[in-house]
Structure formats: structure tokens, C-alpha cells
Image 1: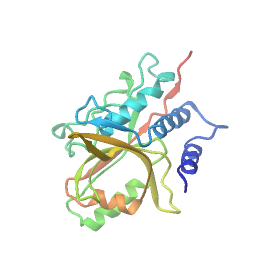
Image 2: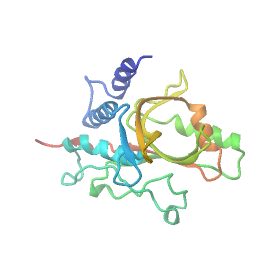
Image 3: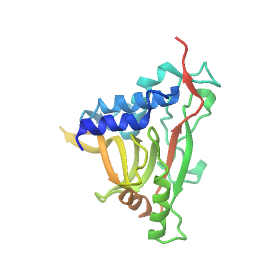
Image 4: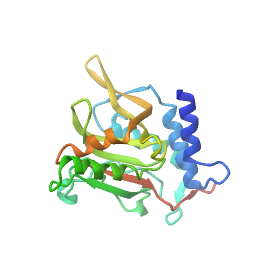
Length: 229
């Protein structure tokens, strides 16, 4: 599948122009603006640099959220939370979930599902449960995870799903930054990858491989409406 075809299919699956509601339009705009960043590099190394995986998502969401609001809190500006939750507060591994302020502050996301490795189960059984968790994703969802990757590294990562889980091919589709990176003059740069396609079994393997791994699916609130102009 060419990049152009993949792009058009992602947008089509994210939102139908005939029946789109404001939430769906925001999702389509969010995906679209990240596609325009494909292949771009941004310096990574601190929370102020959007080359970092979550900082990139936060910045891109801010670029498209201004025309929308939460119907229940029209005075609040929409945003994606930036910080990870403290393990001492959540009981979960740091990096598997966000610090989630109340919707009244403009937090546009809600928790849709969570997965944490169960130490009483085998790695194989954990990977099966992780797979079931991943099949719930929809276009516009954000996955926050700590996983053990195919490269041999382990750590937290944030990504945006561009399409729902495809049960026919058993694939997941997303955009991220910093999953691929490069060093220039000693500085690390995150590279935006807009056409990520991974077998769901592979991603489930990443999640289920270590006792401290876990993930959360965050979804845009159903309360989103257009902001009056």
C-alpha cells in the first residue's frame, strides 16, 4: 500500500464526511496534521522539545483543538495532558498512564481501557490479554505504554492510532515520533513516522514480556462540540 493510499484510507476510516460530528472532525484534523509531519525531525531531550513522543502528541493536538470545546465546560480550552502519573499515586508503573486532570480544566481525553501485566499469569497468557486489550483501539485513540520492544530496549512510549484495529489483517496503524530517532552532533532527534503498521501479536508481545509493563488507551471525550465563532 502506498503512503498516499494509506493516508486517504486512514482519514476515511476516521470520519465519514456525510455523518461526521464535531468529535469525529477533530479526530480527522488531528490525524491529518500529524501526517503532514511525516519524516520530520525535532530535537528530543527535554519536556520542551516536541521530538519526545508525548510532547509531540501534545503539541500536535494543541494545533487543531482551538475550534472545539467540551459542551459541559465551554470556557475551558481543550488540551491533552502532558505529565505521566506518579506510581505512588496510581499503583501502576510510571509511563503506563497519564496524570489526568478533571474535564473542567479542558482535558479532552478519557480513559477507555487499561492493561497491566499480571504477575500470577504466564508471559504467554499476559500476551493474550494484551492482544485483547489492543483490539479495542479506535481511530484517534492515544496509547500510553511501557513495553519491551523488538529492538531490545524497554521504556515508555506514546502514539496516535490512525485507524481502528483491523481484524481481517490483525494489524494496528499509528503515528508516532521518537520511536525512530537519530543523533546529529551528539543531540538526539525524534523522527515522525506517520505510516506505522504493526501486527497486533507483535505489539502484544512487547506489552506482555516484562512484569512491569502496561498500557492505557485514552480516547477523546464524547462531550466535544464545535466552539462558536
